[in-house]
Image 1 (spheres, rainbow, N blue to C red):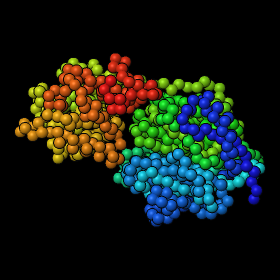
Image 2 (cartoon, rainbow, N blue to C red; image 1 turned 180 degrees about the horizontal axis):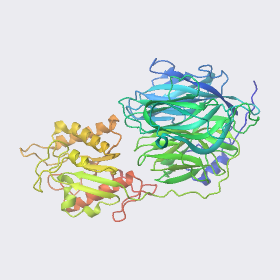
Image 3 (tube, rainbow, N blue to C red; image 1 turned 90 degrees about the horizontal axis):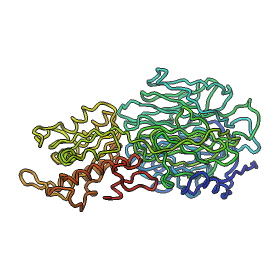
Length: 624
């Protein structure tokens, strides 16, 4: 069959400067034909690849598989692109998966991000390459599972069936409001306005606060009246109980079914539907796939989304009604959600992606475009990556509203600092006023231990251990800063670290900032045994805990390195702070937290700035 290619202006792929005027200039400059217009062909959800069953199946090298899709699981032999669900499991380290047309060079994109011990899923729409296959690369040891949910086939001069009709994004189910939290099935009717003969819908499914049952849970979605397939579209685990994913889901006149393999709430946000036989023939809503390309990386352009901030990006060329993109949140400041929607219109009450503290999380989205492009909103703040896989043809919507703001967040974090005598000098030396940029609760006591029983300190009593101190906190604290452990027994330190983080976790604290221990010390035990080797071993234990992936809330503040060679900050034992050191310690922690939250340095403290204008990480800049 001879297909007519519909060429559109190419997308920006330079990944460097992404202010709107630069995007328009680059877009006009780059003239790249994207591909052939296609229509959606529904496919019953079907597992097409599982590396756990045969680790060598399709292996190209130790990190890459080639997976045949055309002609399998109901995918037509002449398909141009497919919609798939991609699962990473048995993960051996932090990394990502990339999927692209086989036989071409691996692009600088990602479709799925994971940490050690994760099981996580995301959808992808990918153009097919040689003989109808795709290549899959894993940037860390992992098993890969692929489920196919739809195919796209040539539509040379338009079509009636399989065209995408974008809708105003709307939430059509929230079990938190309907009282349907639980396990097993949820039956979801077709949204209002969707014809009974619609072939599929584009929906975002979110598992919310899934119960931790000791193993990975998942959601499966399939057409109402069909047989539940052995596939998944959303996966959760103990560290990530809230996860989202957008899927192109085949439907019947009765809608679709969501099966929950764990106790959870579920949100369903509706992006649009695919036409059936009753629709007129048209080119509007046809999908034009392209090799995946990164169109925005806020790490390169130093313009992350701040908390409650929105940025606009012209990521779709003229003639696009919607764009299919993978959005990745990186270095999230806190747990929160993203919404991707047409630029210049009111933000809808839906979510496109849910992210936790720090760990990269990706989600496919179908973003309806306006005449100005798309807006990306973040409730908590994060760097953002956007990789585009193609567009749906049609007219963009009007953009009557001015661009929203993306301002620095306010310094209103609820933070508790738990220390022993190493930082109790902040209190003793009158430096508490230099703890700034947050609502600080400074619990600084000498002779405090992490676990067990504290020793009797300068104050004349044995303070609560760090675990006991944290256990007394009410809910609402966001950050715990740990500056104790100098008095703990070395053999118990790994157990103590685990106990502290688990206690913080039980109180809803998502960020644990742990200061490294001073190693260049003259500090000795009452029996004159040097503690230098113990503190160095403790620092290695902290680093190993971060690398393990078991403690996603843990981040290291390298006080040991920051104070190396400092003059006048520490007493002769190398651990306790002097008057000037007390102020330096308070300012260091204040700047570190400001850098993590990407906000300006506290006014009374100041300090070096990062290229984006927020407070620079003192571990990178050193002493000011």
